[in-house]
Image (tube, rainbow, N blue to C red; front, side, top):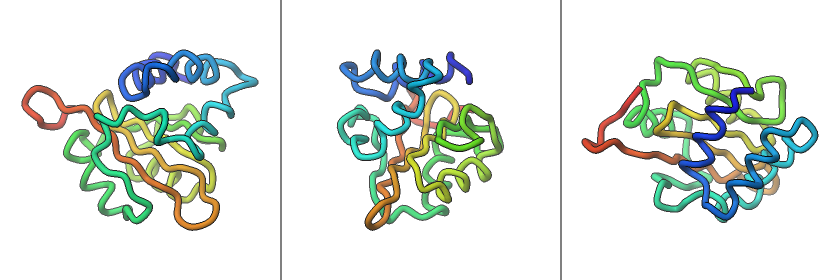
Length: 143
């Protein structure tokens, strides 16, 4: 696990009241799964809305890739938070996104410091997908 990346993600994109608890869970071996589950059904309540670029159950792989590429060089690796063997690993963007899309559980793909993709839990119907981003002063992407 990369605590620095996880903490930057939480401190940047997550609502202040949820930050400390989420970090506690992410950094705890026994509670880490609880952190991922917070995004299963409560993503709307914990993601800071000012950073949501897109939110829809209908977002396609191609749409996500196009949107993220505005804020992140998709030739770089991303960091994954999920409930499977890829949790806490760095993967190329395409593979990380595919892992998240194929996973039935909530998944977070952190793309540098300026963007992330979040998919809620798959239950009845399609999971809600979020693209969150923080633009630099010029509004362009950063690696």
